[in-house]
Structure formats: C-alpha cells, structure tokens
Length: 258
Image (cartoon, rainbow, N blue to C red; front, top):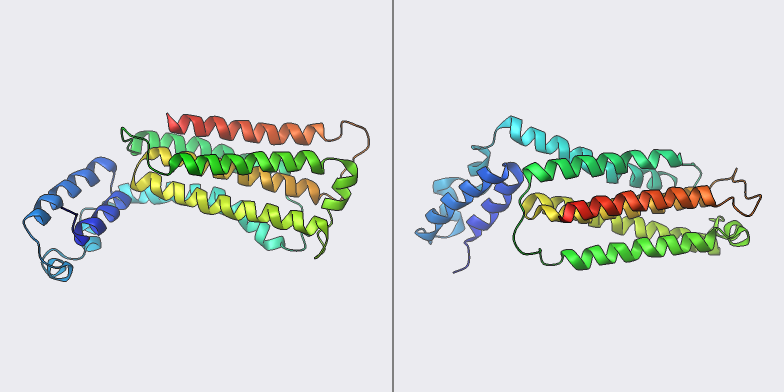
C-alpha cells in the first residue's frame, strides 16, 4: 500500500523542521493514523490541519533555528563564490582574492561534517543516485584540473585569459562558468537531501563545493592582469593551491561517506 499524499508531505516537512528522532516519531504516529483513515487529502486537512500546520505545532524555535542557521551558512559557502562570479560576468573586471577560497571550503567541511554526524541519519544501504552524482562531480573536477594544466602554458594562458565574446578565452570562461553552475545546483541538492534523508548526501555538497572553488581559482588566475609568468616554474604555486583545495575537499567527502 502506497503512503497517502498527506503522509508523504508531512514526512518531508517533519524531516526538514524537526531533529531526526523527533521526525521519525511523528512520521510513525501519523503512519498509524493514515493506515485507518483512507479519506481524501482535503478531508484529512480539515481534521488534522495541513501537514505544515501539524508539524509546526511540534517545532521548537531552538531546534529549527539552529538548523536554519547551519543551512544558511552552508548555503552561503556555495552562494557567495557564485555571486562573485555573477557580479563580474561576462567582462571579468574584478579579481578574486585566491586565498579567500579556502575559507568557504574550510567552513563548509567542518560545519557540515560535525552537524550531520550528530543531527543526520544514515541508512544501511547506499542512497540511490549518490554514486553517479559523486562520479559526475569528480569527473568535472578532473576536467578542471586538466584544463588548468593546459592553460598554464604561457602561450595558451594569454589566449585563454581573453574574455571578449567570440574568442577562445571567452569559450573557456563559459565552460568554466557552466561547471560552476552545475556544482552549485548539485551542492544545494545534496545539502537538502542530506537533511531529508541519508546524511551521506552531504558528500555531494562537499564535492560540489570543492569543484566550484577550484574552478573559481582557475578563473581568477586566468583573469589576473598582474600575473608574473617569468620562469619555467611560475605555475607551481597555483597548481599547489589547486591541489590543496582538491585534496581537502576529497578528504572531507570521503569522511562524509563513512
């Protein structure tokens, strides 16, 4: 027997607004009620209130307020770098401080792992769709690193750093912006699903955040008008920073999957 529409909606709202244990208790109680009440959704709402009203009565400001604060901070770790990209697209007139990219990654990794370790649920089976999304984000990250290796050639760096419409550099910028958009969408979806279901979905959030920040780092290098490319090893510090960002994010993702 399929769950009733009322129970489906109530379950989602309960998992979003309540701590895991309390949400499970509420869903269990309403499952028993719905099992003996086959009426239409509208009729059930007249007696029990809408699912949102029913859950809201059980929500405490402290619990829900803590979760919303955590959610907003984690979302800002994705949104703030993406907002920088939107503000200066398509002319790329502002330079992003490359060291600032480590702050959202550090905050996102620590806060998400600590929060969902204590406030998340973990099912026995791996969530459906988790592995394909992780592999897709990993493939995007590898492509960004490969593109960085190509662009760090002095001749190609000058070409790829030109962001005028119709140029090869503009195509590179559009490609990297597309990667950023996919990472933001995947990261936000992973964060929401980690709250509504298995906490291991936070791995998608962390990997999406990692690829996003590494892509923005590459964009900031391509747009650096004061870049000193004298010498054969000028690119090493930039490659090291990208490698450090990638390593920290991958390690955080691995911990989230445990």
